[in-house]
Image (tube, rainbow, N blue to C red; front, side, top):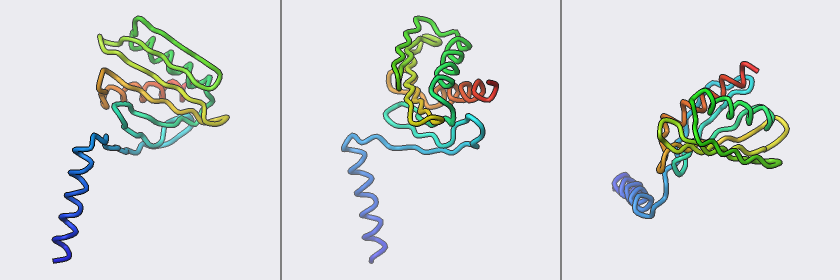
Length: 135
């Protein structure tokens, strides 16, 4: 009887989140190395991770990624501790949000398309990581 109530509770909570409009949080791991990302968070259509590199180095890696992917209509907006790069890659709107967290820690969130595309965002994160390792 207790197990049945527990299952009903879990099912009810899942239904509550489903119908309340909450977006699920998907967490995946990756091998961490010099300048590479660790854990990825997929929230509201954006794939977010931290890089163990300074803000300017990560910003440069994002710019190189956009150039490598032949981004057009590139609109960079860089401030002291944060910035965005908006572009079109393969006719899809792509948004990079780069945020300073500490001297050697920078957060990057990538959103591809209107509702987000996790696979495409992951590809872009992989390219950023590659550029950080090369530098």
